[in-house]
Image 1 (spheres, rainbow, N blue to C red):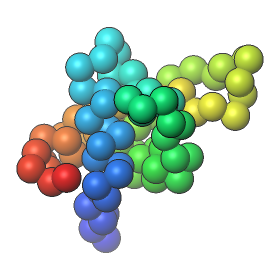
Image 2 (cartoon, rainbow, N blue to C red; image 1 turned 90 degrees about the horizontal axis):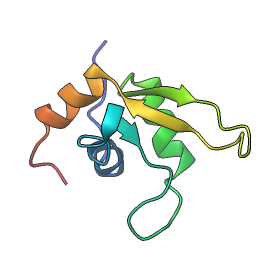
Image 3 (cartoon, helix red, strand yellow; image 1 turned 60 degrees about the vertical axis):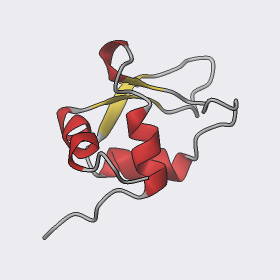
Length: 81
């Protein structure tokens, strides 16, 4: 079964980790708004991101990093907004 391509919101999120140390994905966007949990969960489900560590102060925050599949997905859809 084929996976669905990432949505524009998912790609935007994944691209935020491309040049970060360890592929760290942010919890907040450039405007200070929290990244949608549904976007993060979809990226986790598709294997494009993986949990990085648990935050003991904010256990509900999903701190993630890019996977190799996530990097390949970014590269596969370079022009998709």
